[in-house]
Image (tube, rainbow, N blue to C red; front, side, top):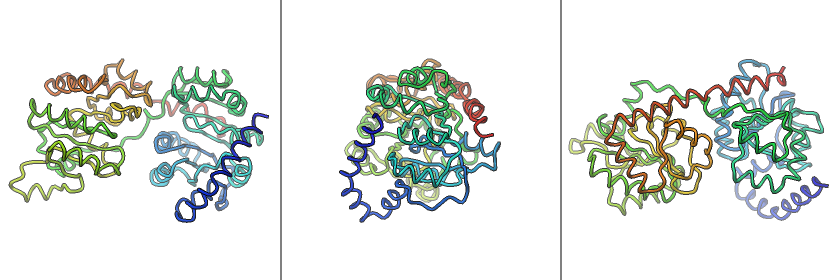
Length: 431
C-alpha cells in the first residue's frame, strides 16, 4: 500500500512534467542525453556483476575516491559503475575518478525505469554515498537479493525532519539495506530513529578526512605566488567559496584591515563563477582596485615597472586553483557561513596549517565545525563585527595564527582512517 501510494504520486508528477521535459529535451541535446540515460536508455555494459556506487553530486563523488582506490587495489578484477544525480557530479566523476569503469546518471526512481536499469547493470552490490534513500531502488535490490550498503552516512537536522515526516515510507524501504556505515554517533541515532535496524548500523567516521591532497612543492607554490605578482612578504586574506552578500562584508572588512596593515591583499573566490560580474560591481562600488586571476601573469609584473605588486583584490575566475592559493594565505575565511548557505568543507586549508575562520551558518558541516572549534583548530565568528575583531587580532598576532593552524592540522590528521574502517565492513561483500 505504501509503495502503491508513492508510485502513484511519482507517476502523476512525471506525467505533469512531461511537456517541460519534452520541450527542454528538444532544445537542449545535453539534457536529452541525460534524460534518456536516467530512463535507462543507454548501451549495455561490456561487463557483468559490477559494483554499483551512487554519489549524488560533486562533494559525494570526491569523498568516494579514497574508498574506490582501495577497492581497486584489493580487487582489481572488479568493475565499478558510478552514478550521479547532478551534471557537475557526473562531469567530476568522468574527469577525476579513473577507478570508475562506467559513469552514468542515476535512474529515475520509478519501477519501470529501474527494471530496465537493473537488467542492464546487473549489480552484485550497491554502495550509496552519504544518505540517498530512494525507495524503489532499495526495494528493487531487495527483491533481487542484491546487498545495499550506505557508507559515509550523514543526516543533517533539516533532512532528519523530512525523513521523520515520511517515516512510514522510509522505515519500510530501509529494511533492504544490509549495512549503515554512519559518520557520527548522532547520524547513527538519527538513521535508527528513521527506521534502520540498530544491529545493522556502525559509526565509521568521515571519508572526507581521507581525501587525497595534491602535492605542492616549494617551487610550485613560489611559481603560483609569482604568477599573481606577490612579493612573498605581504599578508593575504582569502575569501574561499563566497556567496552573494558575503563579498560586500569581506570588502568592507578589508578596507578596515588595510588601516592597520597597508600591504594586505584580498583574494576573493566566489563559489559560482557566473557571479563574477556581480562581485565586480561590489568592488567598483567600494572603489577597490582588482584584477581577475586570468588577467594576471608573472610577465606582466616583470615588464610593468610602475606596478609594484598585485592589485588590492585578486578575483579568482578559474576552476580548481583555490586549494593551491590556500597555501599562500595568511588568514582564510570559509564562505557560505556568513549567510545561511551552510558553509563549505574546511579540510583543504587545514592541510596547509592555515588559520581558518567562518561565520555562524555551518550547518552543512555541523559536526566537523563543532569538533574543530572544540579542538581550537578554527574560529567561528557570530557576525560581521565579531569577524572583524578576530581578523584584527590575528593579523597582528602571528603566534596565535600559527597555533590555530597547527591545531587544525592535528585535528585533520587525528580523524583520518575512515577509508580502512569502511573497507573492512564492505570487504566480505566483495569476496
